[in-house]
Length: 89
Image 1 (cartoon, rainbow, N blue to C red):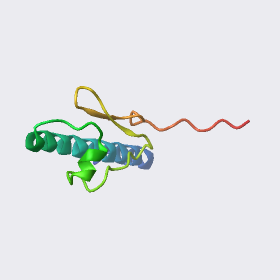
Image 2 (image 1 turned 30 degrees about the vertical axis):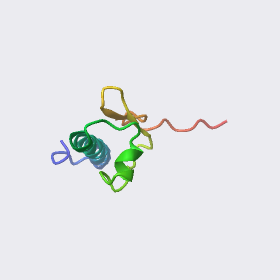
Image 3 (image 1 turned 90 degrees about the vertical axis):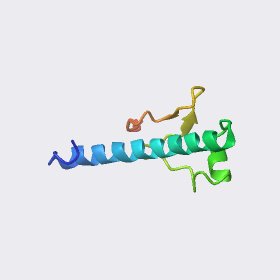
């Protein structure tokens, strides 16, 4: 879709989504490697950084926080959606 659209706004939105997904995948790949090498999961995603499985916890381009779920998957509190604009009082 990204390669096929000429709409600049759509292209920007798709690119942002792609970056977010790539970052989530990089965290999940680090988690899998950690489990394989350490024989257990992490309690906190920062352990991946502390033990060298990630250089840093990548930022969510939507501004959310990465959360490690009980099933071992990662999601972001942003749900990969733009925050609604602030209301003016």
